[in-house]
Image (cartoon, rainbow, N blue to C red):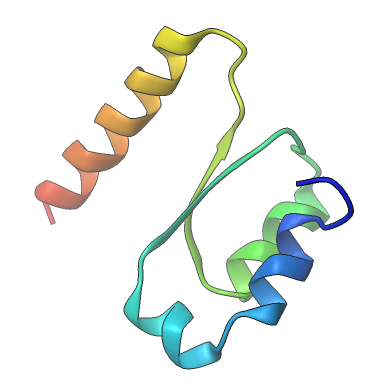
Length: 70
């Protein structure tokens, strides 16, 4: 999102909402500090943005499979 990064967006949402809604973040940043900050703010899954549309489908499938298996 132009003007706001994921950590800023997450910080702007309520802690209660972040606890109730599983947040999956697709981001172009793979910085360990960005990932750690987002996870501290409640991100359940952090996925690097792929440039290939089929890679998005693979990432979503993997996340759904992981959550479905408990």
